[in-house]
Image (spheres, rainbow, N blue to C red):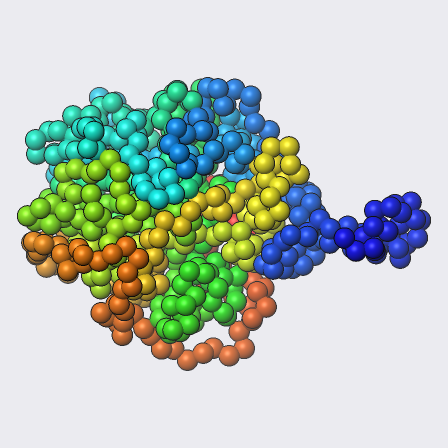
Length: 618
């Protein structure tokens, strides 16, 4: 420590007596409090005229009624929350990872305050039950209610730093020492076990729901850092939902919200139908069987998401996020996602949503296997059409009717060019969609253009608390978190992956649909009218001898993924919202206009939250 800092610490009374010295001491104090911050988080403080992370925490309390630190209920950990420790070696103890800044639900109900990063799956369907015959997501043809989905099995896996390990209590299928299995046609697996996973049936936005839930520490632990994997195999997933919630949410809501709140503080939707997003009789964003991926239905404050490419990069005309694609964009500067500031890419959504392009077209009675990975780099959603002869997929040990108990950390890289861009057609043999994470430095950069409120202020404070290692119990920023920093990189990103796996501009999507209006709905929707092709036998056999980590060549259709546009001169490069926020503002106006017209479900929840508190982009 330098001598001036010692002088500051030892001469407090002198500092208070002399005005100029007081300013000097204040500056030194802020420097001391910020020591250890990395450049983007330090730049955040400077852009907000704040001297330290402590000043940020204080400002959040002043400007937002939900901007402070919530107070947890002493009963949560013993009654509703899952066990923070795991019996699997290498799995994170989540005790110090309690989230106490962010989502307003934590302030409305103490049970929700201090929730930890434990996540699990939900399957939502339109199957009628004894409580409900239909719902807002299920204004669909009878053939859908009776025939979709047809599930073989659903499995949850915990990453231990090297492999994924099956979690029996969170897996719906026939369990054995080898792993899990199921075949819808034989009424085994999911069909035989799903009643054990009934959750919120007859209540809510979907008619029937299934999920792993239970009695707090003695129930399912869910999946935590350092990584998560969920697998769903189906003979038909034409229209349904496969999404993730916090384990606390599942436990509390499964018990009927006994403390007054479901603790809906986080949500990730890798594959979900969209009828409930829109006003009744309004057109859908795509055809009935184009199921969307989104990650921003319930912002947490402790696990920031990208929203648009422009927002994730702080509205600046240079690429920095996601950092793992920096080399790709240096080598392919005109590729989709690398010049997000160009007008043609201003609507490039990396968090999905109705504005985005992250969707899978699923054919009727077509077998698909989905695998969803949550790791340090973000969310990875794979879909395979299993091999017609063997049932194999691109992930060794995962097949149409069974999955092994222990799996390698990653599948073989996707090489089908049609599966390396979002808006995935139904006949594509393999595909991957990517939603980037915002670890601490990226979180500070993205938050720098936003209001210092319960969401974006919490994102920045959590990033700083993580960098300062001051987020745990009893520390200065107890409960300010960036959970991405506690996940491991499981190696999902292959050398041949273009950034188009995170999204393509909306203008590149089809402009006309034949099956997106209620009077057009059917169980034979096709975007291009083509008949599905039989999956080839020996799927990916050319890659079967590839060693883990082996280099992959460039995508076969690289020219298709590249686009050239003239640079737009004079656009703001300083990271302020004034010159570059029009696409964001337009999006917010559009979404809230839909709400005024009667939108329910997905966007209603989000707009009500933002209008009740403070606009997310104000």
